[in-house]
Length: 82
Image (tube, rainbow, N blue to C red):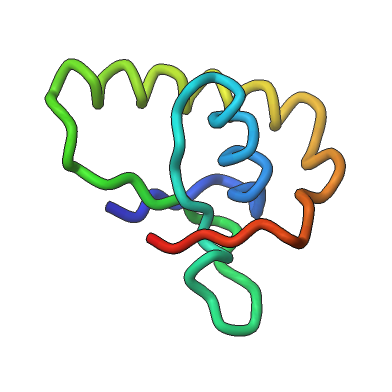
């Protein structure tokens, strides 16, 4: 499922979510020439309870990122295949 964020902070939200134990794909991972950073992708392959917890943590990640801004860029040597 694609989730549109209120601002182009998808990469930062995905990074913060990773720190909170939730791995999601930021939109730019699916864009050939960049862009789509207003989106994150949440796969619906987990149980309902796990998804509820993941969404709670994603909301926490959004709150943290929105307060501080995007912060430093993620390393360019990371590769996501999803």
